[in-house]
Length: 134
Image (cartoon, rainbow, N blue to C red; front, side, top):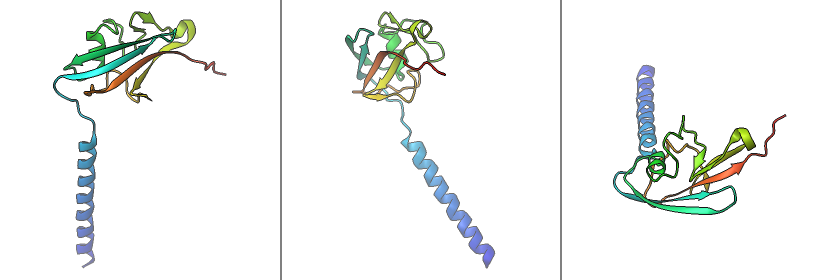
């Protein structure tokens, strides 16, 4: 009798886990197919902004940035880049880098892993670090 209850409990646990995995998989962002319109704002070191409105079928943001010439070919290495809209941010020279935002939020993924979504806005901002270490 006790063994039967154990098997029923185990079966219920398996069903609950299967439902949780299915919900997790279905909640993951997916690449949007077809033509999309996005906005990319570049904020330069001097504070000036340049806004690009792009129509694209690309799945990932790096593809759009390269196709539009916002980031030059060969500038993305392991997801990192230093030149945006003709301006170079040099970590070695002045601890400068290009910060990446999705909407107004600091991105949690890089440009090579960010899906392009219709109507979305992205921002690349020239920033310098104030961290000097100890």
